[in-house]
Length: 531
Image 1 (cartoon, rainbow, N blue to C red):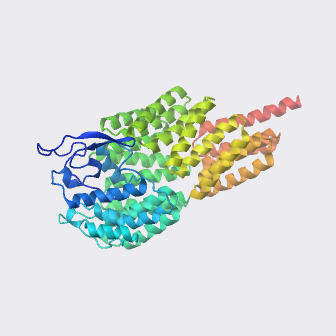
Image 2: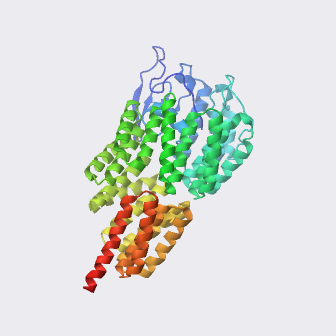
Image 3: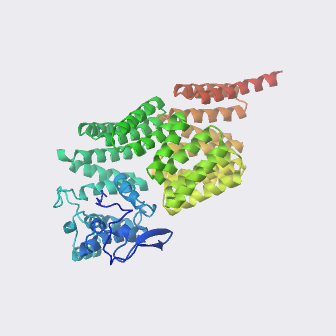
């Protein structure tokens, strides 16, 4: 929704005269907010923070937040206690999820009003009467197409409204509406002066195609956005897109390309002013591929130095995953617990949900099924409450795996089925394939191999259509295990060999070796029968 510029630090509001009341902390639900007799900081207009006198225009600014709060049930920036972080979150477009129900039409109707209420120039904000009419009409106001500016020459927030709405749709999993909203906005963005805006729209559309598993289209849009960022000299924006493109390479198991792009991004952040935190974030993402614990440690220190609690927790969670991959489960749990404490402290429920999934997985690997179930169940509850269908589905798969290990197969099938429906609804084909493989494994454990083979076949088709070599290799390994269980030596060995070759092709030599060990086990089993 744009950047609200302030001439004084949000954590250190401008001092008022001696008659001003002293700030005090008041409870707001499970939040604490800085309040005084003149204004409440999170709802305060920028001019109030610059020692201006309260005015009707300040109230109109707050009205925009009240409209937002009324429709979402959350106070401004509810998931952080640090006001300095608010500006960073707005720049990043880190917005709350709005449920796609009957309220959504009214949300859209109010979007333009809210945007005008948040104009930097108080004179550009709507009057009380204009606001009343907009609210009572419940009809969408037309987003201004002309590029208007404040008296100081600063652009107003309206041109970025389609980006905000499009991102809301993306986070809700409504890719059809996101595509329509962003495509329409891109069609209007023809002015050469709006090239940065066009680059942002291209990146958002690329994410839509990415989530639709249309990787080639996503690559083309990202490439155009990178070219624009390069031509306008926006190194920071270019590095951000490079980090996004690496995710596409990861999904295609193109790890060398992913590492190369992350390395480029880190070099850019090295060269730009105030790029330390973003460099650390890129280092964290790079560590997914080479499991470099030292990169996470360096990032954690950087985030702590710059008071980036949320990013520090993110890095701790990543470090926990590295420890999990290495089998250092106690270390992994400790890092998860540190991250959970931070996320709880700042009220970041999305971060809590993700970390609980990692925490649950570690307990599962330790065969502590009770603790794993508690972690996954809590994750499901948070995801349901925040209407995050994707993480709800992820967590249901975790719970299903717990029940599978407990030989509670019917409950596992139900949970995998629920997750599968969610993945189908939001269009996540990669995790749809994973759910199908999970269901296939449960059927194998029940001795229902015909059903298992059919499920594996569906999963394999999706993995191949996505070009996901790693996912394909895992499905082939599962099929090999199913044939091995039935004593089908030739079929099992052929599938194991194909799986191993795929793992080798993407540089997963440890996985390739593990699959070959399974093949050797099949051969030994046959030899034992012969002798």
